[in-house]
Image 1 (tube, helix red, strand yellow):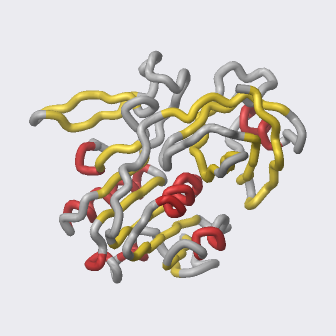
Image 2 (cartoon, helix red, strand yellow; image 1 turned 180 degrees about the horizontal axis):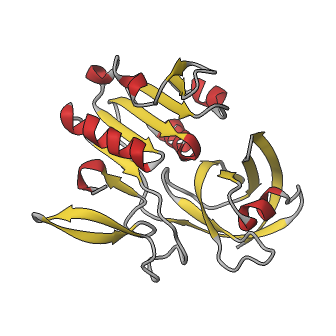
Length: 242
């Protein structure tokens, strides 16, 4: 559908937040396909950061020509957006929940934090240097921030920042770079805590037809490949083979 941009602002180096008109429902963990215009042919998959009755918010990183075009769009411009697509997070109520995000994997977890009805909500956010969206998360739960260079919060990796609270947790949700997700899987298995992770792969169609975004998962003592755009992007961590 064609929709109108309400705002498009830079929130950190190379990171932008766009809000556009939207009247459809979405589930935490889903994504939309955005037409970046210009010379780019394929739409770009971008996770849903937040949704209300009249708008959707996405947060994206400028990594190529398509997202550069997106960053230059202004309030009042129109863009083509399809979705939401994919299988999102399964929400469990009245649990001690840990949400773990790294880098550009953090934005889709904001909508999860808003929608989940937790007994206690702990949120661990990891950045290289610059932080973003931290204040929004602070309104929703207890936030632990780590930066790799120690410029804000604790110094180190985000998975190191959760060591002191892991024994309180009933379920973990994560989104971020593969090394972080792999470490989160190991932590969840070691502590016998169920864990859902949102996996990122290159996508073309966004609807499961092209098979570009295959993810290797365990099945019946062996393996199979599932489509991140259709079967995911959210999987149980114990299933995913890194």
